[in-house]
Image 1 (cartoon, rainbow, N blue to C red):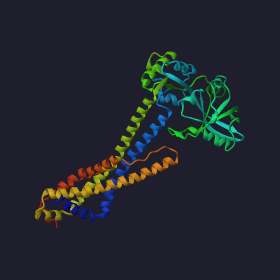
Image 2: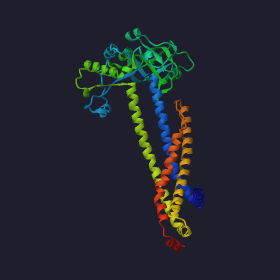
Image 3: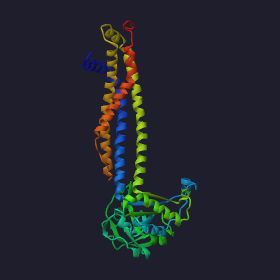
Length: 411
């Protein structure tokens, strides 16, 4: 029997039970759709995060405070432990390292801002004057504060675009005084719109000299993070080690397990993020694949029912010369057609859902990419075909092994 005749018989058999076939196909559609959306969304999220991380610059090294190992970890942080050992002196020591071009130190706090009766909550990013030369932020109007203003603890601020719009609207912000904790700060600059970076709204920030904030707002003499810019990004591993050694010496740390800080280059951060996202994607694919297994079990049950209903037909075909191979091929082909239809439907539905996610993400100003992966489509179709082959094999073999005489008596 040629393949075209087998396909014709299989198609006719499937057409006789449209409703049953529909619900069987539905399970495969759901599984393939879920896998397609997860893979596509995972790639888009990874691309988005990596592009946003790269916007900070590939030649940066971040050093942040952390709770030393053995001190309670996250539980201790939740209880309100604040690490106060990192200071502006650490920043100066890092600046003196051979591969460091410049650095900035920072501390963040959530504050209420007010101007002319308008009140707004925003993050105050207190940092040193070098920030504007390292970060990707750009001045739209006015200027950033200077080293002298930082050292003199001058009460000046630079506004993010959203803060400016919420407080001042169409009014001129430069030269105006806003209040933070009842302290007047003069607006000297406004940044260009930047949107969200790493899912963080960069336009809802204001910037003030760190020494000003330490004295007038926070009452502290420590910082939470130091970001260093390298001269040569290819020497990042050596530079990270130099920073660790320097801070350990300054903090009198002899055991690395007792580090009260964490130092990481941008390439290290990207590798960690890639591993995390890859692991999450694989886990979600594994969970989504459960629906494919359920769909495969449904295929097996349907094929068993089909064999039982068509016992006489099988016996009749065998009695007029159909071989076991012919019977087995026919039932396998039916299973494969059903799962292939499900795979095709899943791919189409997955592309539609992925496109709507793309539209929604870009509506909210995320640089989300949409692409059609031919390799992914082929893989999905092959996978759905494999499900039909695996789960249709046993029922097909049962049909092929039926004794024709016994089968004819079933009528």
